[in-house]
Each structure stands twice: as C-alpha cells, then as structure tokens.
Amino acid sequence: MINTKGKIICDVKKTEAMNIRHTVIKSEEEFDRLETGWNLLCKHTNSTIFQTFEWNRTWWKNFGDFGELQIFVLYDEDEVVGIAPLFYDRYSFFGVTPYTCLRLIGSKVGKTIDGPLLGTNAYSDYLQFLILDEYESSFYEHLMVFIKDETHFNAMILEEIPEQSSTLAILGKDFSSFGLKAEIKNASKTTRVVPEENGWEGYLKNLSGNERKNVRKSLRKIDTGNDNVFHIATFDSDDDFELYLKKLIELHQDQWNREGFAGTFSQKRMKRFFLETCRKLQKKEAIRVYALLPAATTGVENSAAMAIVMIYNNQIYLQHGAMDITSPLIDIGPGKILNTTLIREAVQSGLTFDFLRGNELYKKRLANNINQNKTIEISSGSVRQVLFGTIVNTTQYMKKRYANEVIRKDIVTKNHSFIAGWYHYSQFLFSRMVNKLKLVLNFNL
Image (cartoon, rainbow, N blue to C red; front, side, top):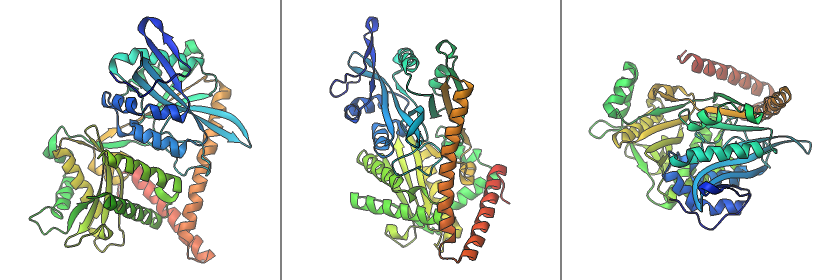
C-alpha cells in the first residue's frame, strides 16, 4: 500500500462499510504533502512522465495563477489509492468570471498574469487519472459524486486522455441521471510512437523502402568504422547540463525564429517551466540531452543538432529537438541522424520511443504507430451552456492566435523597411500555407 506524509483533512466524505473516503485538495501546502504518495502511486500504475509529481507541481507553480486547486484524492483509510489532479480554470472578462472549467493539471489554461500563453494545445502530451487497479470502481463512484455535487463549474474538460484509458469508457457513459452530458472527441494532434517489441530489424521492415534506405544512410554518418561525419556527446556534470540546456534553447529559438515563428521559449514563463522541470528530472536521472557534433570537434557550442529526451517507465519521450541551420553540414540532415540514432538506441535497449505530439513530416516518416488522444467534455449540454462555452473558447483561441501572429510579423519584418517588411511577411504567409498543404497531403511538393 501507499502512504503519504502527514494527514490531510479537507472536505472529507466516507463510505463507512469500505473505509474508503475521498478528499479535495485546495491548497499548495496540501499539494506538497502528497509528493511521496503521489510518486509511489505513479510506480504502481500505468503512468507517463506527465503524471509525475515533479511535472504536475512545477506546472501548477508556473501556470496556475488564475486557477484553483481541486485535486481529488481517494484513500483507503490513510493510504492514497487514486488521484484526479484537477483545478478550476476561470475565464474573466472586465472583472467578471462568467465561465469556469474543471480541468486536469497540465492542460491549456485561459490566461496567466502575463496574459494569454501562445500555445493553443495542452502543455502535457498525455493526461490521465492515477488509480490502483483494484480501486478503479470505487474511484469512479466517488468521482461521480464529486462531479454531481460540484456546482462551481460550467464544464469539465479533460484533454489529452490516452485512447486506451478506462476514463473514456467510464466517464464517457450516459450522465442523464445527473442532468449532464458527456461528449468525446479526438484531440487536435496525434502522437507518434516507435514500439520496441519488434526489435530494430522489425522497425526497419515497417518503414517504406525509401525511408529504410534513408535511415541506414543516416546511421552510416555516425557509426564507427565508416567515414563518420558526426559523433554524439552528452553532459557529464551539473555544469555541463546547464550549458547543454542553454545551447538547446538557443538553437531551438534561432531555428523557429528564422522560419518566422515565436518558438516555445519566447515567453519567460514557458522557458522557466522547461528549465525547472528539467532540473528536477535530472536529479532523478530521468532526462538526457544529446548533442550531435561534427567529427573531430568537442564542446556543445559546436552542435549541429540537439535533442532532449525524458526517460520514464520503459519509455523515451522526445521533448525537444533543434538544429543549427547555419551549419555547413545542414544539408546532410543532422536532425534526422540524431533522431534515428536515438530510436535505434531505444529499441535495442527494450524501450519505446515516443515522438510526442505533432504532425511534422519527419515524425510521420520515422514512426508508423499513432496514438490518438481524446478530449472528454461533461456539461449540462443546454443550448446556453454550449453557446457560452463555444464563445469563451473561441475568444481565447483567437487571442492566442493573434498574439502569435503579432510576434511572427515582428520577427519576419525586423531590420526591414515598412514596404520590404510587409513583402517578406507576405512571402512568409505563402510559405506557411504551402507547408500546411504538405502536411495535409503528406507529400513533398
């Protein structure tokens, strides 16, 4: 069984016959006291890196400004057997809060003190509840009571739920007895995965003939015994780790800025969340940063490509990758060389390699297995509720898209006259339209 540090008493309800009770955590102090029990529960469930205490606590610290914790915890006496890490996400207009969502920690949020975040998707690629198998039935019975009794939210929106999750089957059922309706729909983006069970040769066989040839060609650029062009380095001290993170962020931002995009780390809050999470995971040896260096060079400053991966529960998650697009070796494809090397290392080590969310062409080419996450929305289903929710969500989405577009325009027009700047910006818009068409068609024009 799993024990927590200290005893948490808050909004407690009991089922006397079974000694099972649930509580709702509403303060950060109570949140912190859950750490030991939370992570032990992760070890006993089919969790991902995005369910760890480190990820959730750091996310809340950086993005929970306007939210209110509503962490649902199920106990068997004093032992934690289930957690639903929820919070209220409030949408305010001119000092009025007309709409409140109940979401999972790690979801997208309406706003922060700094204004709207640029991302339009959830900030975690997989979100789900943590439940010991033998308590699943009790967990959902208590959670249903909680949902029924709560009157402080307009909708419960659970994003990025894995398609194999029991949550879909149980919370997706008929809520008519509660006067509620549940709707399940596909998440906007899929994740791409390379499973380990078929081995390296099995992986190669599943690729197209042309892609299989390209993968082998890429690996010859790095394998010992060939005229290898590159070698891979990684950090071996805390100081090196910080240098690797700094260089990765620099390359990532430069690459995206040159393509006319703000980049993940353009907002200080996103950068801070990334760095804090990396440092916590590094202490648990759950993260690695790799640099692809030209042969006969040393030092991360010479990186032609970089990648940062998170390692958890027999999975390797590719969190971010970046290339030095000014490198004279860029045409050789350093990003692909690094990715294929990491995939091979993962598969040969018996680990699943997960590209995480995104519809980029290189992910489609290198990974055939698709995970389609789901979104569950539970509400009264009334016309007023649906209309109001649509207006709020559309408004937030448009505000984020507008903020993104202003930054992109500023990047593209920088250091140009007014007329030249708008000419370059129109070229950028056309190029972006073509790239989106490529993604839709999965075809190189």
